[in-house]
Length: 239
Image (cartoon, rainbow, N blue to C red; front, side, top):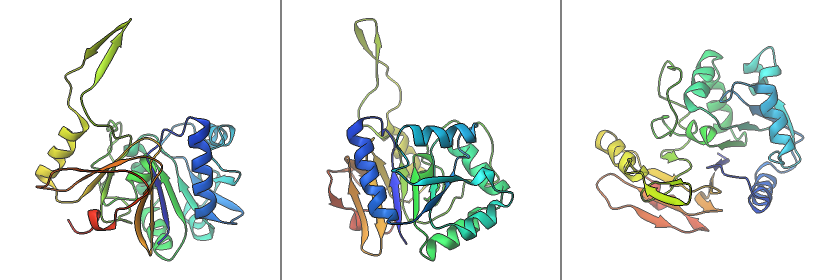
């Protein structure tokens, strides 16, 4: 398989350029990418925004929502890019349009897949490590299962602080580490906490990290911090 999985936070010129380079390496000379905008409500606006912000890397983005038959669009696609937003809304739409199995099969056959944020979540076995509110209830939390690990996008470590005027106050809310530890109280799957700007590549050569650090969580073990570039294969195998 050939996957490119991003956390998000591609909001600076440097990060946009880094993302574009990664996309060119990943997609090569394909002429059109099937873009899945279901994680946001405004599908047309989403496609425009991706182009306006340069997050298309110069490729033509073909919104799957414009096709009368979304399954056929997947069958005919040269590559697929699943955008971020609300993971529950995205997964609900993938079930409603019966797209999980066609996407899974085509990617396993070699179709290049890219996901960012929610699009990275759905590449995992489940959506259980998303940060999103369940604004809609999908038929199942099970997702594409293209990788054997979970991703927590937009990860950061430490406590939360809130700025009020010129003063900074500790929030005392749960940290991401707290939430992932709770996940491992009920689940065994390794989790990659992926910092903003981080990109995970999955190929026949293994799993690698570029762009930003990551923290690896395994049940019953202390988390491990990884700086890019790095190979993550040994850290996320098994569960």
